[in-house]
Length: 186
Ligand SMILES: CC(C)(COP(=O)(O)OP(=O)(O)OC[C@H]1O[C@@H](n2cnc3c(N)ncnc32)[C@H](O)[C@@H]1OP(=O)(O)O)[C@@H](O)C(=O)NCCC(=O)NCCS
Image (cartoon, rainbow, N blue to C red; front, side, top):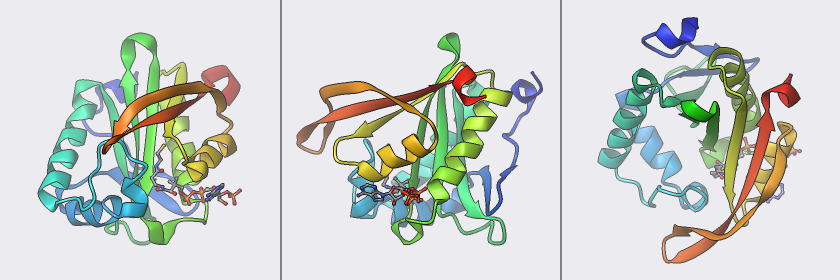
């Protein structure tokens, strides 16, 4: 497949947004926005506050995913402001099983106008069309109603809840699984 031999992920555009590769100079925005308590509380491995040095390491790790065939992480930006990272959206790929886990977050100032749904829809389409995936799924920490709603809007089906499955801080949290199969997406 053509995408398999690309050395960098392609720019993906939607009506309002562009999904571009992360850059090291996004680190400050990542730290500020993902490290915001309202965002970090629903992300498994993000502390609040989030030091810029840790955000830089996260970006370096995510940039390596593509070349290793492990998936892709894109910065979400407005088409007219490509330098201003609003959030990120990712697919962590498990090639053997032809599936990938969708992940996303958005700075709180951008919530509530459909941006996460628009960005995730574009990356799911890319995953099925260009990465040859058969299934895309997501894991939502308990209480995250907004994210469940995003996944439902995307046509994902709830697949069940794993009880006290993931530790966040000192608490063990339930995780609800959502998924969509390639033929359901088409
Ligand atoms: C989840 C998140 C990405 C959503 O971003 P967003 O751009 O506001 O999402 P959208 O606008 O596309 O859709 C959100 C939907 O949830 C709804 N919603 C928001 N808060 C809600 C709540 N507490 N309960 C139920 N629905 C809620 C919105 O009304 C909207 O639905 P609508 O379009 O039918 O009105 C954002 O809240 C976020 O970054 N949260 C923290 C990190 C996170 O949860 N990441 C996902 C981990 S699985």
